Structures are given as structure tokens and as C-alpha cells.
Image (cartoon, rainbow, N blue to C red):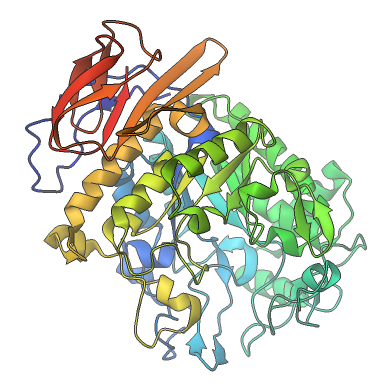
Length: 553
């Protein structure tokens, strides 16, 4: 575990640090996934660290708006890791788009030509797409993240291959179905179909032994690694006893990255569009691979946390509890290898009263979902109705992301008001602009909010949460209505953690009740104004220009 020291990590900005209490020692907090701050980015859209890999496989066709590669890569992410960008935000887990080599051709449709810049159109699961870098670049990214106490979550796709193009033949009828397209009327028309036209659906429900697709055999032969790949597959199937069914080939390829690099978890794509039992199969193989990596790399192991899986069950909301209605079939994905599910409900709850939201989420997580968790988000790469598309409620967005019980998912640029509305961009493309580094550097104003002010707000909340497991995983209790003050209390084994949060308090001098959460004369630290305060008669006095107070030991 890293021993955190709380300082104002804003050297990038010109904001005064005069109120910072330097080198404030924070009690060491265990990392728990239920309280994680996860930063999600499309690798191609985040940061270009190596312009020499921007074009591969002659992907030079003119595309529709925001539908081609833009240069982001692993070196760009690593650069930001080493610059402490993520630590400054309190981020302790990185999730980025899938890494597999993408189809070489483009898909031509009404939106214009589209390349697989987003990572969800796999051509070859055994190779990293060169647009994002080499395996050495990927290894460097994971190692840099781990050295900063940041876990790595790999986005995995088993449901489908990439589209068929003139450069990308089908895997063949014993591997995929090319129709019918899903109509989502029931379980069958959600699972046994293609998500959209020309997105071949892997036959994940089949246990029949199949040979490798000709397109892969020819590719590996040309690359001089056919025998190596065949030997590894033979060893895998001999060890596991699994049939040589399509899904197990892909699971082998996906878990190779865990075994080799120490990937900490998976984000599972399109989970409800396959038979739910396959995720338990994948989890078992990933657990084995993670254990092997830990045994082989004892000096690199961060902690004793198990491998982590979070599923994208589209439209799952926390109110569903353990069971999700997937076309008339009630499915418990938590019983099928998932530690957490992405929560699609927070964006619809977002404008409700804070206490309503926080109490609701805490109650569900401490009861129906006890031992499991959710990953809250408000913006993503494929949700066409984000909570605050026009970026008019940026501070509230941050409050909701970090203070709502559960884990938090920042979508790249949430912290910097990255533009989500692009003229002529069709569908999801408008959500996938390049990261707005210039706005951060220039302190651009959006809807009356300076970018650096918003960044600082994210940093304070993110660091507070990362250092206090009670924020995301603790039991919630309201202390007062006006100002709105609540506590969170987390206990596990010999470790305990308590926090007090005040929202919408007065600027300037203010009195904050702490109830009986902290005893008389306890010295607390306000992470928002960076000052110590003492509990007197069940309350603290704080003089700060802020309406937020974040208290803990």
C-alpha cells in the first residue's frame, strides 16, 4: 500500500496553495473496490505520447466527424500517470478502451466511414493494436500505474468480433452468426443475435470443438508465430479441460494479459448479450491467471485484493438489486462472476435531493447488495443521454460522482468540462472528442466555470474519497438538514473510518454538527479548506470561503 500524504497537487495550475496544510499525515487506508475512483478513457482520445504510431494498416480513408483515429496511445496515458495527473484526482483505478488489434478496414454507413478507434471491433485478440503502442508500451503503462498505487481495469469483449470489411473476413459460421440483428423483444432476441447489422456475434453458447478461423491462421503464419500460438492453445485446453469452443479461445487470449502483466480487473462489455454463465467461466480463469501473476511477481503485488470484475449490463440500475430482467428472464449477474455492475440509474436520480439519493444507495448497498457493489457514472462513451450534456451542472456532477455510495467512474474530461456537443457528429461520436488539455492549460471558462476551478474541486473530492473508504462503502446517516450534513461509517476487521460531509453550508464562518460521530476534543482535518478543526460540544467551527466541508481524522 502507498502511504498517502495530503498536499495540494495542483502545480499544473496557477491557483494559490496558501491554504494548503503541507504534509498532513493521513491514516493509511486500505484500497477497496467498493470505494474506488475509476477513470475511464478511450485510449485513442486521451493523450498522444508517440505520433509515430498514429497511422497503421493504411487506415487513411476520410471518415465521418469524430470517426477516425486521432493519435492517443499508451505512452500518452503513461505520461499522465507519471505527471501525477491521476493521483491528483484521487484516481486509484484506470479503465481504458479494449486493447485488441482492431479491424484494418473501415465501415461505411450513413455517418461516413468509421474505423475501430474505440477498441470494440476486434480482429485479433492476441495482439495489441499498434495505433496504441506495443506490448512493451502496455507493460510500461501497467507498471507505472501500479507504482503510483493505481489499479488497471482492462475492457474485455467476448460477445462479438469486429465488422466484416474488404480487409477483414468473417471468422466463419462455426465461430459467429451474422444475423439476425437483435430486436430486444425477449431474452432470445437479446442474446442469440447480432447487436447491430454487420457485427458478427460470437457463438458463446456453443460447446462444439472448432478450429481456428482461417483469417487468424493466415495472419499468424504471415507474422511468423503460428506454431507458438498453437502450442499455447494446446497447453491451455489440456490444462483446463474446456472444449475448444469459441468463447474459451477468447478467454485464453484475454487472461494471457492478466497472467503476463498483472491486470487487476475486467470491465465486461455487453454482458447481457451473452449467456450469463460464461462470465463465471471467465472469472474463474482470470482468478487463476491473477494468482499466477502474483506468485511470479511478489515484489509487485499491491495488496491481497482478489481480481475484480465490473459488468456492463445495459440499463441495469441499483434499484434492481441482485436480479435484472433480461428480456423476461431474471438474471443475477453478481452470482455469475461479477463483483460490481455499472449503475445506469444515477443519471436519472441526479437532480433529486442529495439525501434521497445518498440514503437510497446506502440502504441498498448495505442490504440487498451487501458484499457486492456498483460503479456510478454520469457520462460515458455510448450513453447518448448523459446527465449534464451541456456542462451546466459540473460541480453537482462531481458531488454526485464522489459522494454517492458506491464506486465512482469519471469519464475523461468530466473534470475539465470537455465538450460533448459537436456539430455534425452523429450518435456516440459526439461523446468522443479528444481530451481538452488546452482548456486546462488556458483555464477556459465554460458556462461561467473556470476549468481549473472545476479541476480543483474534482481533486479535493477525489482525494478525500480515495483516502476514506467510508465515503463509498460506509453506512450513511444524516446529521442535519440545514446546512445539510451527513456522516459515513466504515468498519472491516480492525480498520475503521468515519467522515463528516457538509454541502451547501454558508461561506465564511460556519458551525458544523458532528453529532456523536467524533468525541470531544478530536482534531479533524477539512480536506476542502485544508485546515484542522477541533470538536467542541459535538460541533466544529470552520472559517472558509467554501460551501463544502469534508472532515475526517
